Image (cartoon, rainbow, N blue to C red; front, side):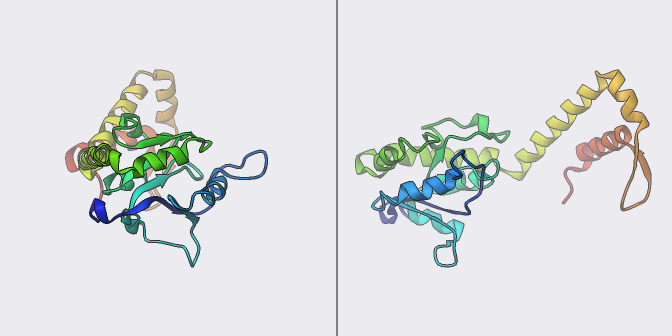
Length: 212
């Protein structure tokens, strides 16, 4: 999907999920309603039998909108790997690696109430800003190649487990109770303490890597 052949709009498809405002509406619902006034630059619709679109086909558009649903956006990581710029609605949830993302470096930010969405989309579509927007795409793809890989996920998980083990080691009262509590492995029927089970699996993780 070369840049000069992309559709000059921001795209979004998804279900109307998420928390509910006091007026009974949800952010995604308000987003769809908002976009109806700007059809010249927005292709934003809930997924239906008629409107659904393969996620990879989002790349036919110059920009892809990302908005929270019931929790953090599970699709954000994949969107950052695409060759369209991500316009991200301000989020109440942050995945562990998202704190490393920088607005206007890896994605384009907009307010949670959509007050600057139209202005931002038109800025992205302006040919005079194409060089800047394409650089943001390159930055997000570089982040994808280095941070959003199975190898990096493995390293991140390992450090988290080691930090958790250290926390337990420095909390003797909690650790004593943890050593006493047992549970039965559903597959083998063997009794484990939570402490021994964690310790064993950290060692296996270190020597053999994550399960496949």
